[in-house]
Length: 435
Image (cartoon, rainbow, N blue to C red; front, side, top):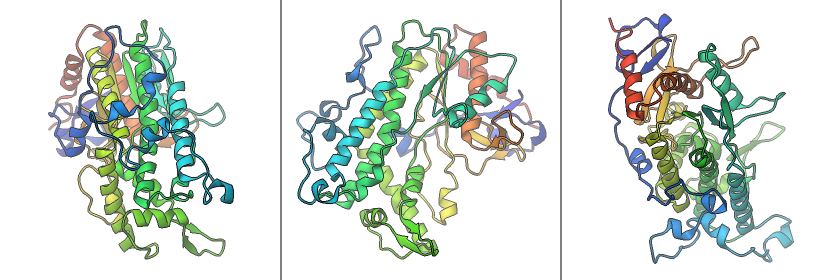
């Protein structure tokens, strides 16, 4: 597979032969990348620690400065796991048949913890590659099935053993957070939604990484995770809850939408370009603030960063996709602050992959401009299945191409460090197409 450097993608190139791009640039820093680079205190034993309920539980002690008590509903997921069973009040479940806000939060928190616990699995001692993703069934393939297909087809002559690690939403309807009876403010409801939405995936991911790190006989040398979350992706989810369309074509603000707009300090002006701009700006800013300040999110990010660092030290390549939200601002007509499309799963210890449009040789317009991006690979109209016309675009399908390259290099050089492996790949990328 032919390659070139990221810097050279701006030069005259031959797009018809371009396959993979890469960069050896030192990583830039931003507020979001600095946050993701926080090193977790070493709380593991010398043997790698033990797996169990405590490893995925959220505790107040693990998330708060010493001597500081929880205030209000900040860190609602942590509080929900520690609180006694909430009782329905006169304005709650007994009258409406709906769970109260506190009950909805507690139910979601318990589901998140139980799902994360189920992701602590045995590692196949024969597997060299782990794919963390959302997999479907034989008759209904999922995102992860397409990612695995791209990885296996990149170099079909080499077929390393792959182990799948299921990372998928718990399925709990967190939109109830916005409408459930209770005295929570719109701002508290919004933070709880973002917190649970984000921590769900992070806890499952951390459980899978912990499984790999604590397996005494693991031979996994490459991990691919074509998943992630960023302020823009959460904003899209929230925006989808604002309005509903009636059978007559009329558009009406939903109860959840009213709460979301109130939380952002917005008036309902109906679906309009002006509202789209305001929503995109305010929502991404508020979500980024929650990412930075929420205790439960930051505890899981610290764990994820620590696991990523330990994997790197062990010579395991952990590859993540950059994300596809680069055009969110332009589509909405808004000028957004940097970091709105940065993947929380990206950090200095793993390898982040963006997408290039191989027909033009330029970075794909949707590919995140996250400063953590290390390499670019084809991500437009990628074949993702055996059937004719099964193609898809996204950084999800660029990442496994880089993972395949790194895995092949690791198989040939089992004893070099992770930094040396990156350097080896970067050297192989240099100067392929520069004129």
